[in-house]
Length: 377
Image 1 (cartoon, one colour):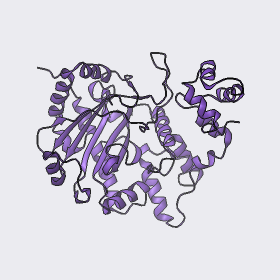
Image 2: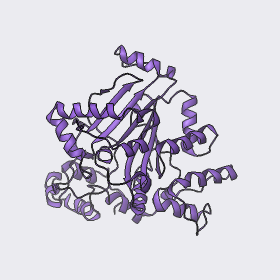
Image 3: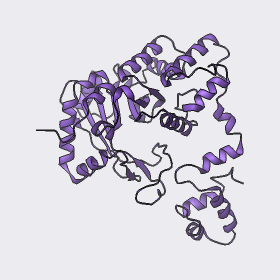
Image 4: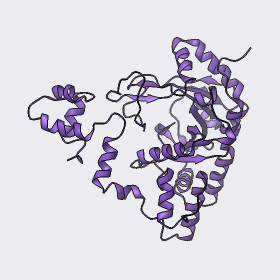
């Protein structure tokens, strides 16, 4: 009998970490059990098969991440579903929703995700079997291996592995940062996960000067790496679309101290390399060759280091900064901000909210109090 949640074999073998490849059928069976178990499971499956499908969520609502957990070679199980916390890290492009309704205060969108966690450290496994939730993580020698991906890329893929680009994040850390809030690096590759991660590991152990590799070494030496999460963000055969998405993600997290990318993403990254003499104008490198270019430069110029990234320069340009502040998902426009300031002399925040089409009165109050949009004159 055909499984209800059939994972594409070619994509699974291309993307999944090697220790998980042989467990595809087990994961399919567990997903099928989850789907049959409740109305929510059936709704998750329906949305998961749609490449445009998302859940709109507020704090306290269930995150559509179905996590299969394996304790080494034991049979797996579906972990309890988690709920959205206030301040959930998310960078989303502006989107027109089929419902026609804009996002409300603290509302975010999340695609259905398949996530697999392979736990192999004996200390972790013993604690899990005994139901212990708090342990001394300094004893952990084998970080848990996580892999996650928007479900539709596995359940209803549109591309072929050898003809597509993959946008991903490597996330690592310990403690409460599990599984998404640790240090992270956004990257692009055309190769299989096994080959690309093997390159990263060789660079890490070989003393690579890239920030991602240095931070991983430092945290590992301090025994602060208890999980490594390989997170697929997107798959496309359109290089232009890939570059745009990568640039948006890196830029959206640029002020995040956990970000380990050293230069802008996408075409802005290529312009940066050319502008600063790291890349000849006539050379067009493959997306996953940029790490090597940066690494070679840093090795050749250990004291000079990298020139300042363009983002810091652009934020000094008020017009550019305003465009970023006002151009994101469900943000106020420049005209709305100016209207709020004028109307504040005569109306309450609640009345202004209705007049200008703000999300709610709280959004208007923050503008009036000078807490947001201060750069808009």
